[in-house]
Structures are given as structure tokens and as C-alpha cells.
Amino acid sequence: MRHDPTERAVSVPGPGNEPAGRAERSLRARIAAYALHAQHDPRETTAKGRAAFLARFDREVDPEGLLEPDERRRRAEQARRAYFARLSLAAVKARQAKRAARAQPPENGTAA
Image 1 (cartoon, rainbow, N blue to C red):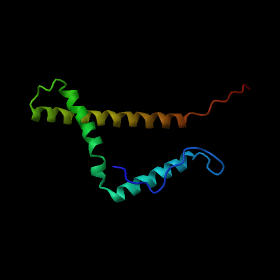
Image 2: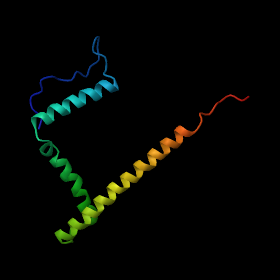
Image 3: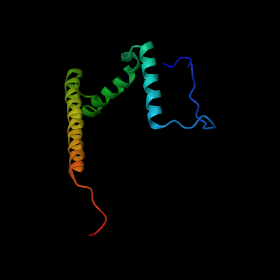
């Protein structure tokens, strides 16, 4: 879905062309995403990726393709919900661990 680019990214560092830092790369990526979505419907540009992601759950619940389509769809929906619930639980645990790490006093390597 790529069209003629107006600018090309320069990949060879040189004088005045130092490698972009993390913040600059992030900003350049955001600009590119905004430009892409200004020209195209995001649902169209991401349709193939979403379809592949959702097909994963169909294959997970019915790898042999033996179920009726309605039953496969129902089970795939439940598998998708379980997937996102697991992601949510992992995020909660990560936030708890981060909070606990901040609450710990820093270890001092010197003995008194």
C-alpha cells in the first residue's frame, strides 16, 4: 500500500547525518503513521493483519477444521477473550512488580 515517498530515510551515518536517537525515531514513526492515516482508511490498511490475527484463534480451537462455522466462531471468540484477559493479567502483574520495585529502598553496596 506504499506510494511514491516524498522523502527517503537515510540509513548511512555521516557528517551532519548522525543516527537518530530513540525519541527522534519515535517522532518520525508517528509522523509517518499520521501521514498514512491521513491518506487511507486505517481499517483498510490494517485489515489483512487483523484477519490473520483473528484466524489464529480459529486455528487454535479447530486445527482440523471439523467444527461447524458457528461453533468455531463461538469458540474462537472465547479463545480471543481468554487471550486478552491473559494480557490484562500480565499487565496488572507487571504494574504491581514495578510498584514493588519502586517501594524497595535502593541497596547500598557500602558496609558501615
